[in-house]
Image (cartoon, rainbow, N blue to C red):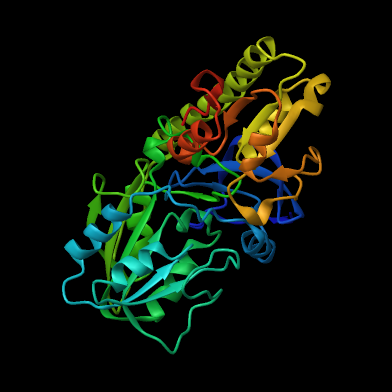
Amino acid sequence: MKYQEIKCPSCESNKCETLYHYKDNIEVNQAEFFFNTNEVVCKICGFIYTNPAPVESLLEQYYGAKYLYSGGTLDYNLENRVNYLEKVRGSRNKLLEIGSGEGSFIRAVSRLGIEATGMEPNKESGAIYSSKHIDNDSLFDLVVSNHVLEHIVNPVEFLSQLHDCMLPKGLLIFEVPNLHMYGVYATAISHEHVSHFTPASLSYLMRRCGFEVLDLEYREVSRPLGFTVVAQKEENRVSSIIPSEYEVNKSYFLQAVSQVKKRENDYKNYVNSLIKSLSKKQNIVLWGANSIAIDICKCIPQLHHSQIIVVDSNKNRWKCELSKQYPIKINNPDYIKELKHEPIVTICAISWAQEITTQLLGLKVTDESIHIAPFDI
């Protein structure tokens, strides 16, 4: 992954301080990406972002190749998303969703009579409509985006493009992770998240790009770490004061970093406990071919690597390898039925733990052998 130095995406200052640096080796769709992430805080406004930032063309390749789960259970509250839209949209009826994924939200609002279009760069998503770019010939009075803006290197450019494709008085409805919740939900610290928002910083960016903020919602959200901003398109830039959040944002972020480091230690302790109860004839099954599975593999001694089996519900991943570092073939979960001895199973796809547990019980794996990865969110 190539990187380039950038100014603060919020206030454009070049004065920043490094808070956290880490590396990730991620393999998606048989392509390998090396992330060298440096999280910084702006000394002027307190905005936290990745600097140097990944080159956007390579980020597009990464997201275009990444697998999206399309199983039975969504990892967000669809009902909350739809209900909140209905509450605030008024008579507006032409909607664009940025990051439409597998299309669940588009289908839900279409049933309400809303004319809905989705934009999704991932070819594997199965979305109703997929496009990498906004069609400037189409104008919308509703633009919805859920947990997308934190992946954008240049949010000002992105919001300005949306402003150009919206009808007068059109609404933006954006949900993003709340930096001030990071101490509770440290999952938001990720190589994929290049911008970290607070209600004040996102409101400032909205106003800077020509939107008047109408509402901030913290309860009726689709994910517990998020908040939603509702902003209305105005023809001129809306006046706003640059936030001053350096101390408070730095404090929340460093608290989350300590949670990330604790999680790494929890993985080691978990694997040590697992190995103690493992017999030579048993297999270690990891359900979910994701970064959690890779992190657990890192903690398993080389002596036991031959006992590792990885399964995943996404049939597109079957017979692929977990990663180049751990070239373990990914299997259909039904493969568990072929094992002679009951395995010790770790659920790595934690958002679907309940659904997977039910499937495992159906595969005759007992409760005592089913564990959820110690991923303290």
